[in-house]
Amino acid sequence: MSLCSSFNVFAPYSPKPKTIFKDSKFIAQFQVKSSPLALKFQTHESSASLKFKRARLKPISSLDSGISEIATSSSFRNKSPKDINVLVVGSTGYIGRFVVKELIKRGFNVTAVAREKSGIRGKNDKEETLKQLQGANVCFSDVTELDVLEKSIENLGFGIDVVVSCLASRNGGIKDSWKIDYEATKNSLVAGKKFGAKHFVLLSAICVQKPLLEFQRAKLKFEAELMDLAEKQDSSFTYSIVRPTAFFKSLGGQVEIVKDGKPYVMFGDGKLCACKPISEQDLAAFIADCVLEENKINQVLPIGGPGKALTPLEQGEILFRILGREPKFLKVPIEIMDFVIGVLDSIAKIFPSVGEAAEFGKIGRYYAAESMLILDPETGEYSEEKTPSYGKDTLEDFFAKVIREGMAGQELGEQFF
Image (cartoon, rainbow, N blue to C red; front, top):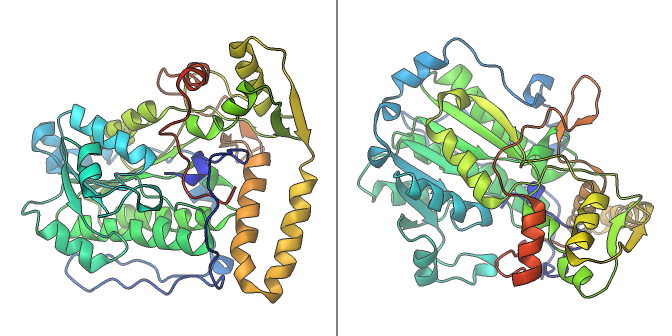
């Protein structure tokens, strides 16, 4: 899942990780084997040295006159969906599962890459994974090992036209972010391109506009290299980068609490952050659109759900209205989080292993204060008007469903909070 789009500081059902990494250094440099199709990627850098051009952070890349020519030259776009081979990595994640179903529904020949033990903490075996991904050709492999992934794709016996990546780190920690959001995602690009892929659809996150966290920096590094590949190295290769706002499930963590009569908890006055939440079905449909639609070629595509942007205060008011109760809020000073993070950062200077815990605290602080909307580069403010909307599912309908059926199947993953 995309941590940036699906994080709730107050989600009571999200388990804490059982271990903390022993140091806060980044993973070793990723090596790409030389071959005629090997990509000219940049070498791995620490977060301190990562610098991104301002142009890379613009919400939407401008269309150029060459898009129609590129679309025409990519032979897969002239085929019917049943003849287009789509490789989906991150297929067992929260959004990945819906993307696989949507692509199958549209008639594509879908190959879903999955681990032998998938799901949160590897709870699903092969049989359960095959059941979840019914209709797809399931390829059990390891996206963190390039040679293993390449061998698995080779064994399929057919080429790849499009790669769709729904990969995302499970907890947003420093090591996991670079291993998954950057290296594993890069592996899927290298391997896919080696076996013929001409288009790459990336599920990223809208919060990378303001990169203060390691997983955001990891995502941005890959985004930059993907753009460079298509725009400077191989003009026949294209991409679509999807940056969604908050997922419904990230906002449902307090439904059961409020249903039990407890107050709705929020930071400050409840207006510090806003979003246009999008359902998993609507997001999956938008990602599937990116496979063939020419107006999404070589684009960075921020996307939200239908309707106006909602603050935590407004989200709570919706929930109380559905329950037919008077609103009851608990407002927590955000300075509490600043104090905790400051203490953890100080301890981390002496005990590096605490660096991961400090990062988890920063993640919570980020989503308590930053809106999941387009960041206007001219004003430096988040803009509801400039954040595109898509789909038909509303947060109010989602809340009503959770009140009736609970949050089963909506687990957030292995976040610290």
